[in-house]
Every structure is written in structure tokens, then in C-alpha cells.
Length: 318
Image 1: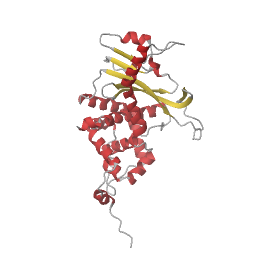
Image 2: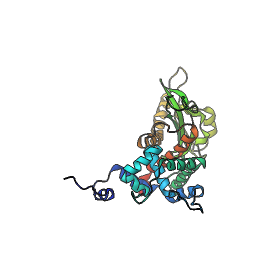
Image 3: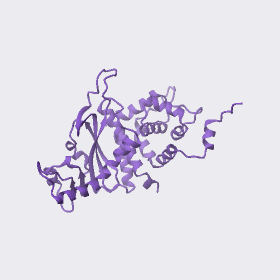
Image 4: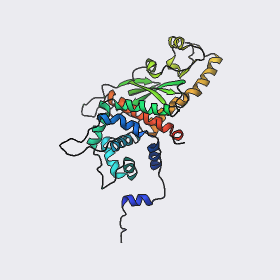
């Protein structure tokens, strides 16, 4: 005789093991400054009309679903499907199967477009960083600068029959890449990304500099691609450290003192790779999801805001 199926919620409540997904979502639920972020969106979110009709989904539910999308690299249709499949995700979103509506893919898409249209992902990034500064986590003394390539689909098998015209190709080492770049400025003490800029992949890393500094640095750290005598001269001052990797003269070799300086710089600037690792490996964002720079730029602001919270979650929970 087959077993009588248990109610999903009851079955989930009776299990003894806490999964990694449940632990991750529980931690992020604690560290996200929900009140601050919701306050940014409320003025732009639709209200119920005087003529009645179907009321909009609760704002907090939509924000939580949007964050789930970014944490788990979910498309709009996949986000809807996953909410039906995953009890842990429904619980995080505050949805009770059978009692509450699950947002469909169009509702999820419209919420994302609302954030893009009003520049709210950039506002979320700034507000999360203000929250971390209020907590005393970012010290703003030194900045690490770097960039990474975000690959874009190179196939032409799509409705347009062409690759994304706003993306471009670039060569790194012996390999060619097609996509865009994320340029970041990272707090040297906490590892928090405080500045973000985007460009096509073709633009050289060194062309994005001033946008990544907050102006209060006593030290800056970057690889040899950012070498600039003009910038070094402008940055000089009492107690300031110019931590840019030394470059050997053309046809020559580095002086032993420069080699030693490079080893020290490399140890300091290694921390700049942590935000990239979180975005690409933890959140699975290894390829652009949308066409055009604007939509992908908007998503990157959300990803780095959430990445900042993930990197310092233990300190926030202490």
C-alpha cells in the first residue's frame, strides 16, 4: 500500500537537517537592511487603484523574489518555477503555497523593469554601503582597483540573428573574450566594493580610474595595467601609499627593490578578487543575462550590493 503523502510544509518542518540553501537564506535574511531598501522602492511601487481590481503583489515579497533571482542566477520563468519547487525559497519570500499567490514570470519581469527604470539598483548599492558604513565596517582609508570581464553570449542564434551590439571583443593573453567589464573600487580594510562602473570589454582597465575612488584614500592598490606617472604625481602627499605594481622598463628587468614591492602589493591587492569570486562562483553570474549594457549594469549594482552583505555577514551577525 503506497504511503499517504505528507503536507509539504509539515514534512519540511519535521526534517532534522538544515540544508546549505536554508542556512544561506537564513543568514541573508538577517543581514539585508530590509527597511532601508524597501523605503527606496515604496514611492515607485504601484498602489491599489480606487476602482478595485487585482491588488499588486506585496512589495517585500517581490523584493525577496528579486534577490533570490540574483543569488541563484534565475531567469524570470525559472524564478517562478523555483518558487513552486522550493519550500525554502517560498518561506524566504513569505509565500505559503495554497494561501498566497506566487508571482508569475511577467510580474517578476515587471518588477525588475521598475527597478531599472527608476535607477533603484544603483540606489540599493549606495544604501547598502551607507548601512555598512553606519555599522563601522568600511573605513575608507585605502582602495583596491580592478576589473573583470563578464562574458556575453556570442551565438547569433537568436531573434535578432546577431550578437549584442553593445558588447565588444577583447584579447586577454592568448584568448579572445566577448562581453562587458565590471570595474570596481574595493575598501582595502573590509573588502567591501564601494564603487562600480561598467563598460564594453574593449575599454582598457586603466581608462576607468577616477570613478572608482572616493577621494579620501591614503593608499591605492592595483595591477601594472594602471601604471601612470601623471596619476602617481597627482596622488602624492604625506602618508600616502601608491600601491601600483611596478612595471619593468621596455627590454629590461625589474630592480630587486621593485620586485620586493610587487610581492607586497600583490598580497594586499589579492583581496580585490573576493567580490569577483562571490559574484561569479557563489552567485553563478558568469555570463550576461540581458541584451544591452544598461540592463546588465543595473543587475551588477544589485549583485555587488548583495555580495558586500555576503562578504561581511559574519561581522553583521556578531
